[in-house]
Length: 152
Image (cartoon, rainbow, N blue to C red; front, side):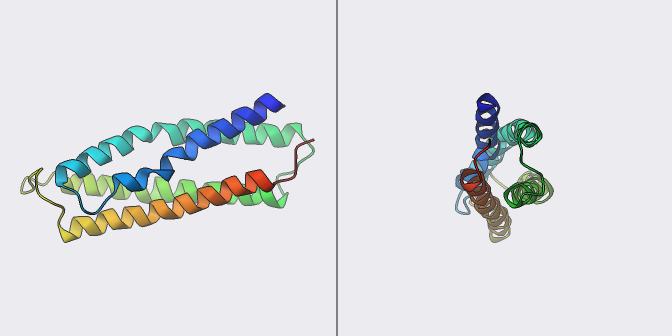
């Protein structure tokens, strides 16, 4: 059981980890080239939430199934809701908005040396707000995991 808990915790950290520093990539005051690079880096990091998050869900279900806990326990149900909200923010909001931003950066009128226009800065700020929301939810998720009742 301890190995399963360890795998669950590590996969959760790996899965949510990139969310905590993505804000650095989405700075409003950067050049077009810098933002393109930031988007490429963030896209490469998408692997970790997919892989880590999937393992965290599977191991979390296994932990509940193998223990005396129930999915209706407040901290488990709350954790699942928080996790689903994080996934919704990233998958349904950040990724599509990042795609639109990447497409806007392909405008031939833009030079890689140009600083971001007010419109592009607004798009970056919108992504960043969503990332901050996901980060806050991630902190709440980890807090729920730490203060939960101990597994038997």
